[in-house]
Image (cartoon, rainbow, N blue to C red):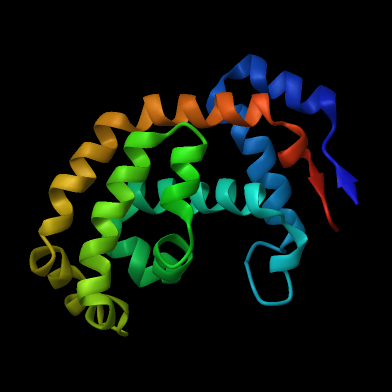
Length: 166
């Protein structure tokens, strides 16, 4: 078992919520060798998986929205797990609601959204799935506030996040 260094966590917290959360994310990514597989899933507990899922979610949303998130293979990890419910438990209620709305679109078009595509087909998906546009705008409007709520939850329940089964 590995426990994150309290000094490292404190120093990151002083820099801000993004840096604070990134300390945990970096440790989780290192623990799973940068990628979640059947062989590495057990190394993280439920709270850690939720925080890592949040990381993948926010990274993909910033890069290319829901279409990219799904095309890059995170659809099942986000929508097939209780991520939205966990976000609500973390205090990020609005983010949880948004993910539930996106899940409705995902569930209705899962096969099409997850199929292998050429670059041209991938780009066309942004037109085909404009239903995600409004949700993406809502996400960017709430991102900072919801991240703050998640960081506060992690601080309050830090014991659930700082020990890794490696």
